[in-house]
Image (cartoon, rainbow, N blue to C red; front, side):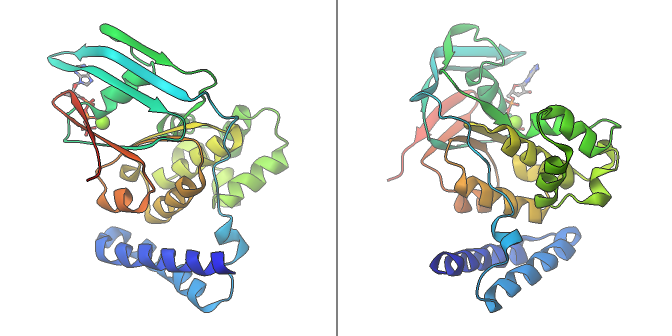
Length: 264
Ligand SMILES: Nc1ncnc2c1ncn2[C@@H]1O[C@H](COP(=O)(O)OP(=O)(O)OP(=O)(O)O)[C@@H](O)[C@H]1O
Ligand SMILES: [Mg+2]
């Protein structure tokens, strides 16, 4: 009950921010969220669907060191990132900020081992299971019905469980039978979050997630991040998201140089 009250209050805070920041196009969706939020205030306990809408199941924990870069640099055209010296530890929750073109996405590619360093070294820890919403989303861009595309990624799962999981993410019969490519960006993002939950991840990487999400999906993502107990790398320009998501470190990247910002 205590927990339920706290959640309702948090949701209200988010709701107020939605109201002030929503664009006209998003206003209808924001109103829909408001209605949900208002309902939370008048009932004793949030409804189960809302409360359990989703959480991201962690994979078995990784080692203490998730990834480490030593004097690592990489060039792309005229742009050079680094040399970078940084260590990401188990359960760090890092916000990566900086101007457009500063090198945020390149840093992720480098420290996740997607692109080899030109100089220095990068090493990924044992047992690290990386989950990326964007990567997962790419799986849902084909002509197969969503439920088919999803089931292919979790071959051990009975169809009924796939349907139940997708339904928890607000993807019901109207969505799951349609070609995945015809779903909205927010729907595809919810499907990819469902897939991360199904697979279990211990390093969640989000590069500008709010660019692709509708407001209910952002709210769901923020809730999921709260309960996620693995390591988090979050690139975002979204002030509200920076304020809402629990973070332990902040890296700022400008013109290819990484600076760790320590709270004063
Ligand atoms: N494949 C590539 N070839 C050439 N240049 C590239 C390539 N990828 C990125 N760059 C350049 O590297 C620089 C850093 O890009 P990066 O995508 O890492 O920045 P970012 O901080 O993620 O920017 P944004 O906020 O716009 O996402 C940019 O100047 C970009 O044009
Ligand atoms: Mg980027």
